[in-house]
Length: 422
Image 1 (cartoon, helix red, strand yellow):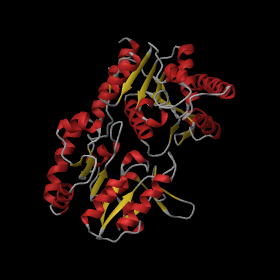
Image 2: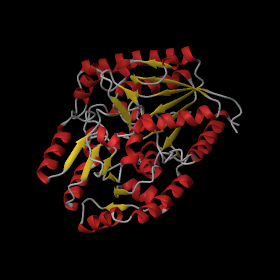
Image 3: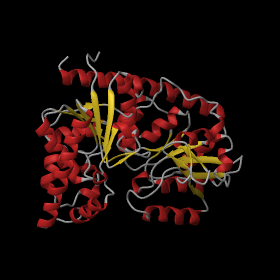
Image 4: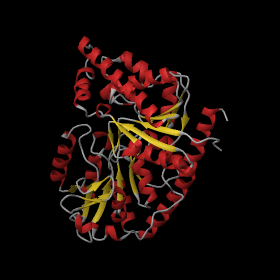
């Protein structure tokens, strides 16, 4: 048991939207608050309560200064003195704001969400590294995906800063990773030990199968017919999500009632991939729908009186979840589909094969391409509701055992007790 309550400051580039880092940080905060701790937020983009937050726009990776800096350092092997000077000036400014954040909210512990893991905002990682050394405040670095896992960061002119800050070699910093591969790589590259905490959902409290009145008529509101078969792709539109495989699957199934619905938007890595998907779907005769204008972080009504739905509202109308990712740090969409008892198509990405599949989950799988056997297995599921019920119930019970809030709570209590020497 934790013997004292902490005032915990979460730090990242953003805490907003439905990206994995924001969602997982919210789950950690929920569990920590239930244990009596107070939670505060620091980021460049925020949708958290203002009274508990500090928003510093240049901490976000889409700030114009950071976008300019990223254009100078990635894909180049030499940097100019002006770039070095700009890295220093921005990191110095961000470091001062971190000191302000800790003073303003009397923070006793920091949880750094991916900001010293992947250099979407290099100066923020540098600022955090120096801040930790200057303040000696206890901190946990929650790593979701390291820079060495992304090819776009492989050519750069900031190797000195990557070695220094991503992540830092701070003996007082507790590292947390979300998969076994990351733990191995962190130990090999940085000589740092870590604790494995997988992504989680509240499997101790199942969703209400009846839903509520807010989602009445949701299918029609999104432009679907009542008898349409919805395949949900609940991810961002970035190349590593492998959405072209979902398009290929729908094409091979040959059922015009199947609609492929993508819940999230594009932009994090440009719009070229979305354009390619639209052209591919048109060529293959697939009804592909992007619904991010109607699906947001939370339920709300926009200025025109139009309902905005949450991602969770999409699952009850879904018949199959497509998750053909080429790579994932863990797999939030996988857990969400299991939570809502939906059948899944999964590309057997590395972390799935090592951390998830061995626990006994049942899915339709592909190995880099959609085979005729894949189409046969999906048809069998769609034609057999009893088979779906048995599969999804088994998956739910396994997830409750391995990926629940109970698992997260035990791990976080252990870390906090270790940090405080209890």
